[in-house]
Amino acid sequence: MLEEFKQVKVGIIPCNGEEIGEGTLTRFACRRVLDTLRPHDTVTICLPLFIAGDKGERNFAKAFPTITVDGCEKRCSQKSTERLSGRPKHAIVISELLKEHGLEPPQSRQALEEKDKAAVDLVAEEIARKVDEILEKG
Ligand code: SF4
Image (cartoon, rainbow, N blue to C red):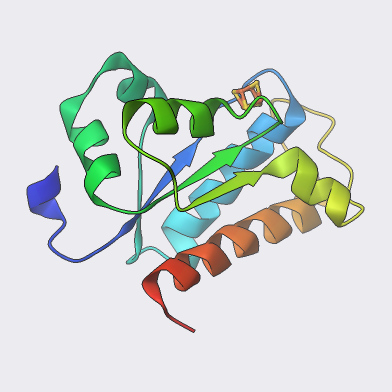
């Protein structure tokens, strides 16, 4: 994996939470950053593969800056990253971010509704801002 990344990229590590709406939001917001907002500056790291011991994923997270994105205060992604590779540059917790901005978490775990758009925008823009800070852009 390292060979593919001669330029510095930021690894985005979403928690993959399936059990609450915030976990769904985590995945949607991370995809927005990876596909649309910062496609040339970011790569995703698959948390299950990372935990399973994939050397490429772990080495990437050791060598390059990472942002963990967790649905709730249990911080599964942040804790795994700290244990297996090193401290992330930023650790975003969606439930805290939504509370700070007075937004409700999504009600559904399967799909987001129109009213959840503001929450996706907020989280995706926060991740993109942290990517820019790390790469000293903007
Ligand atoms: S951080 Fe919360 S939402 Fe994400 S996987 Fe862990 S328990 Fe689930």
